[in-house]
Image 1: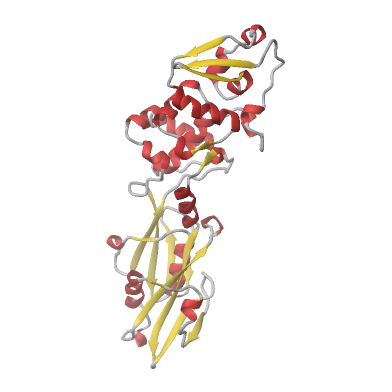
Image 2 (image 1 turned 90 degrees about the vertical axis):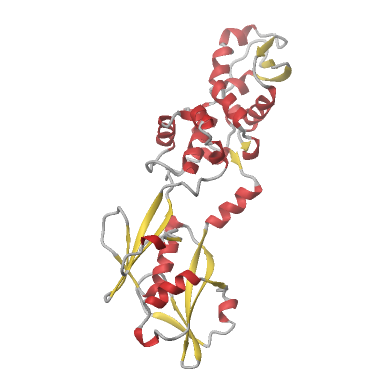
Amino acid sequence: MSSNNDNIEGQPPAKRQRRSLGASDRVVLDVGGTKFITSASTLTSNSAYFASLLSDNWIESNNGDDEIFIDQDPVPFKILLAYMRRGNIKVDDIDTDVLSLAEFLGMERLLLAIKVRWYRNIGKGPVVSTDDEIAVAFDKRGGIMKAISSGLFPHFLRPNDVDADKDYAVLSITDEGYKLKEAGKSGPEHETYGIYGALNSLHLKRYTYHESQLRTNETYTFSRRKHATTDRSGATDIFIPNNNEIVGQERKSYVKQFVAVVDHENENVAFRSIRYHRQNDAVITNPGSWLEDNGFVTRENEYERIFREHFEESLADKKISMFSRVISKSRDDASW
């Protein structure tokens, strides 16, 4: 569980607690044969191990030259000491040795952030709402050492998109129109206008995977990766992402918007829903370069089939193409 000091914003944890010192705040450590010189306040405010080891009596009698031997690997300790000093840590610096030593040293703030990130990335289990609840759920799975020994460490570095649990939404096409329903959620179905409007609505909520094997009659199932929602306390903000992670986060903020283009009476006509809800289409006659100028450049062959199966009967024999463009929109802002 995180301490009250972790709630202070804009201030590295290593600088929060300053004791009334005796001879010196200087601490000399011999970690596995490598010497480190730091301060008692840096160590005790970040580590339950050092908070217990460096008692008030020890600090009062410390002359600044006494060495403390720690029988641990100096390589991961150097990384963790840098974290203690600056309050953040590079994702690329974290490996199983760093995780094991953080557990040994009782680095509660870092351990909480590790559990929150890891649990989110695993993509399994119940959806929970707070960082502490995520930590409890993670510990019920065996904790950090169990996760390491079970081969789950790669999921700390990157999300598990293959075996993660899924949320589902169903698109039903009837004579009355197009209706959407999120599986397992109460409330009525939501009506949309046209298949492209339905796809826009689905993608706005990140239902980007078409589960073709789950199609039944006039019903199509879409899915998205289940994720643990949090109270946004910022526990994982201590991690400095690498370039690949930054690019991945940017891509995950993207959703698609769709346009259908139909060959109609020797002309190309583009149909699009202006927004995501039920309303009349905006029709662009002879769209030509309009598609490319507005970023609709990607052909969506799989969605073309769904569109063609249920398009108006009068145009059933026409050539239909589905294009998409990428827009930046958060799922948290989406509603049907």
